Image (cartoon, rainbow, N blue to C red; front, side, top):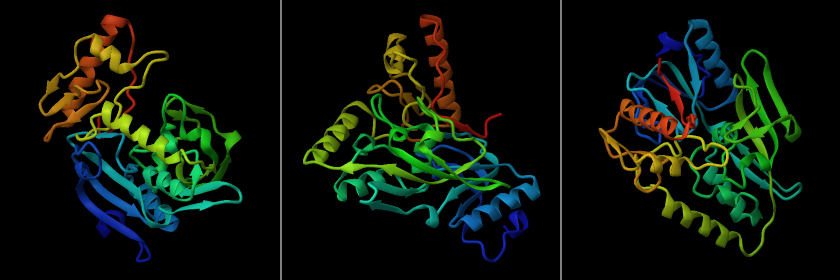
Length: 300
């Protein structure tokens, strides 16, 4: 591996060559990355990106793989994940904030806030993925999202260094934010408030709704398409009769039609085939072009 990246002895983390990305996505789908690297410190992250630049290798930063579909052929580049230095989470009373690293699971932040008696993160209970990915996608529900809780975000721009954004510097949209795509989110501050006796009940209620309405027992990427304004993708897919349709071991969930689940041995091509079926049918029936919410890696 030294011949591929030539990382210095001080590098902290690990490197896996020709690593199947099916091991690193919630879909359990994906061919091999040329290298999968975990960088445990900012210095090591900089070393990896510099090595990729020098060797002309493409790179991609992945969180916990909860919103990612990797091609069956894999990715001819380096997939970078953030490790130890970016995984911490701490709750402070003055001011009322949670400071979380980008690699920290969103579920971990929700739990930390709850254990500290802080309110404001209940909406995210049961949501997979990391804080970094949640910020990129402005994860949340129809009524609440993580962008509403952000006080600041720290990012790293290769070749330029660290940058801190205040809440007013960032625009938050539906499953989007204005943070530059060429910067890597490292840490954020999230605003909370003193909790009340109903925190646990709200969290349990939100989790119960997820279990009832989402196919949580199957591997998936979560919602596949973004909801058009004022519409529900699940309703549209049901309307064109595709709920439950199967291609190989991929299936449009018969519980929630905006989920395509892996029944065991699905390929990325199976998922894409179902996505195209949905897009074509919804376009013909409703004149709506559905936009994918899932991100793609390794596709031409």
